Amino acid sequence: MKITKFEHACLVVEKDGKKVVVDPGAYTTSLGTPEGVIAIVITHEHQDHFLIDHVKRIIEANPDAKVLAHESLKDQLEGLPFQAVTSDTGINVGPFHFEFFGKLHTQVHPSIPQVPNLGVMIDDYLYYPGDSYTVPTKLVTILALPVNGPWAKFSQTVDYMMELKPKV
Image (cartoon, rainbow, N blue to C red; front, side, top):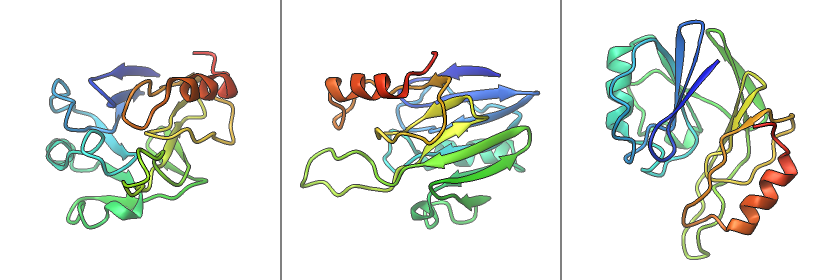
């Protein structure tokens, strides 16, 4: 498995010549249009994790790819190969196995409504929680840890990492 980190929240995971793009958001400017993409995972609807133009461009170049996201994104993804996923469920796409965990984005401020957020575990190996401190029910080998944001508090981020005890 090869993991490539792009700006802000975007990751590309590659295995057996197939790719998964996670959270292609507005701050991801160097992603380009990857080929060999079979899935796009969107953890939540905020623009820094989900830019519809990126998703459309990736699907145009990879028409068999699926978009995996919470049901709340259904309207925004209309006309695209969307598959709703829920917490504590698993799905296989090509050589990848995905499991989703969590319910809501960590609170930014009481005046700002929380949106659905699903962390994703890829192949029982890599876990990316999106913008949350959701603890998956599985051992985390590699943690793609969000370390800053308007919702993140350093002490909570460190506590989260210590609770998960990832190898990497």
